[in-house]
Image (cartoon, rainbow, N blue to C red; front, side, top):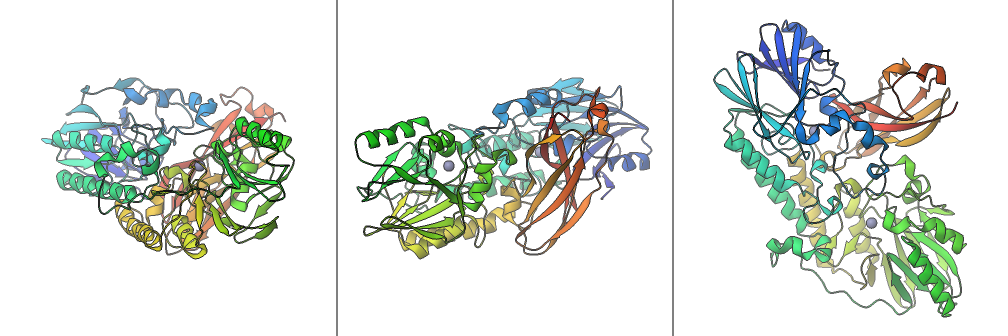
Length: 614
Ligand SMILES: [Zn+2]
Ligand SMILES: [Zn+2]
């Protein structure tokens, strides 16, 4: 682990651990900015600092706040706007609204596992005097809603500790933190916090710092150029997103500034669906010549009523097969009731099945707690006959990674049911939490190649009434744009591939949440997607509550290029006696420390244990 530091001025140092920690020193006392992790202690010792008097945090993320053992009597200051996410984190972990049906990215994930004591909260314009320095506070939202920048005037210079607003010249630490709605839910807000971020960067620039110290990143000695470059990059990346975005179909008003842009893919007209299809809610229904019905998705009880009405009207006899396109709540919420009402075979792609059969094991956007029983999980290319139609199933990582596609051939047409993956305006990748990976044979690249090969006469989206299709030229344009994005988005991050900055599930715990019995052994897998072209090592270490008195050893694995790796853990759960009297509640957050490719990432991910009686 890195344990080195650099000196910025007579009184100011920065420790470079898994984050940068500012050390403002006055004799053997110090004020710290964003201390996190234990490696930090060595630096304090080396500098001869014996007393930490005050701590300032720029924002509430666990990877930059956790584990620093805060001594008693130390003043701890945090942004006023997010003080709650330091002091009352149980609200977050125990409120189902932060666990299910996630359309909202406020507050951001990476919440502290345990609250910390806060003595001071700072809003815009607050002034702090400490030792030789005077410190001003700027509210600089963007990376999180309440992030602040601390302007430290010391030794005749001005240093801005700007949190995670910027990583380096033209770079940010991640993009998924910017998933925020402007006129829509956060779910629809890809790069939605970019304006807020840009305003905050301008505000920092206007305060004329000589040096920027990011929480994640490198010390920036040319703030002006670094900020200009980042704003330029973000604008470019957003333009490349808009140019083929399906969202232009749903919310044209959001994109009025881009209207008529010749570099963007024009939006096509749809066409009428064949007469043997019905569409209500997010459900498509195929009526066979036999009178039987094939149903896709069931998001609300209304759909069940409408299918029963078709039976009453003698339009259909019975439902014989049911296909689930993907796990989103507006497609699965009413499946348990549907399955009771229409006993039939339920079919879904293997990757979709994993989520809908055990939703607790995942924490994903729009996830529903409804459990679906799948009778048959399909693999890429599995084919079967349903009356006069030939059905072929595909893993179709479009709108989400956990998504299937279904080709239905018969009665003179080739219909492709793409779930929510396309509209006439393009691809549906407006929520970064859905894991829209960039690169060859993954994400929309894979989906578009498949459409190119299958040449459906009609493409269907669950939310769109007309059918549509794409010309070869349009598919080519979308593929070229994705290739360009892979290159330019990679430039935006410190990683060697864009997906690390875009896919907040590249490290994940499986299961995310599980019930564990006291006195038993829980199993937990830390899964890691290596998005690079070379092998990388990953080290994971689950951090158990201190009251358990158990430490799990860090464990390492090597993951081949462009592959998933996993690290399994067996975790003994203490019996009632050893838990009794401690502060832990029934729902326990287990943060996991990650080191990837020798880069320590702190408490980067978490799992949830729900304790049940022994
Ligand atoms: Zn952060
Ligand atoms: Zn969806």
